[in-house]
Image (cartoon, rainbow, N blue to C red; front, side, top):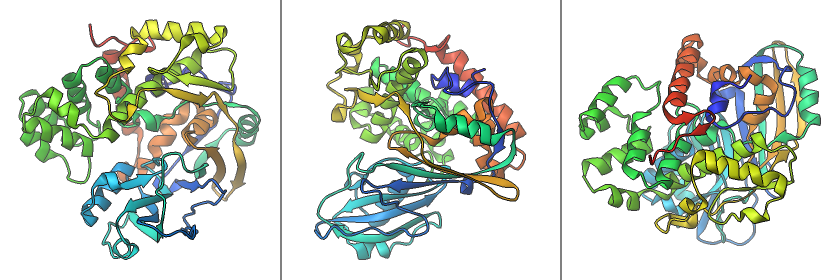
Length: 429
């Protein structure tokens, strides 16, 4: 049986037997560690966060960014503010999980290593090994990521299901992080933006604020009354970065088209690519014979180039979503973000290790860039995946039973408001 969160994200199929699963829990963000693997195989490790110099110094300062339970955008925002340097002068090869300990290579232009070393940062953000380099870090520069995950209270035959997962090509779904675990609406907002519903999209992004936000009801009442300044005052300064940006734009009454033209590229890309990811997940859930790669739906897609066995799935999904390829071709979009591309249909796990401890299991494996560890955990736990992921909030909430039921009710409300069967409804009608 497919759980509510999987339905929201367009995942309707498993790679391994649906009847084989374990029960397991995470107890904190410390149980989930992500370390970037560079193209030469070097691991940017938590234990030894050092970079090797290329021998060609320049105006870019490369460094290792280690963070704990911090969103990547928030971490860069904090660095930007501390250094008084625009965010667009920071570069990463990829985003990393928020609710985890992560280590990755990053760089900034025209900031010296001494300036980075002298920063007074929060305890959950650290910088190591700043060095001058000639070239900047670019999106996709790394090979992939190594994941180390500690599983507690394991019930079931973990060795059996691990053997299945290791020996089976795993469907390369986009994971929950692409859509938002606590607020899985990025793809919903993305479709609205593509349909030209800019004000509605921004308002939905505000109204579907994280259900764990303690002032949520008051916040929603203020939005309803158009009291955007009061709503802004309720949001913590170092969280809800995109929500705060949208509210400030509404406060200044710049007009929808003006707001859209000023929208940060990172926010626009996040939403549009989330919708493309949702469509890809739907396609992967419905295709029977998997080629090596399938295209992402975008304005560059030519349906005639797709093999006939897959073409009808693309057409059926486009029809069910009531969209055409032309809606992705918007000249107002920055960075030509809606082109599409290609993505591998399946992935094979590398370097899988499983070690039994006294009262837990530690698993470690590597995946190529763009693939998600949560998809591997989903194969291990099946319907129990939500309970597993919510466990990272245990130190904050203690017993997560209420949290689990609250999130399920929230997911049901999203499915009821924004979906028709497994598809998003047409917001333009």
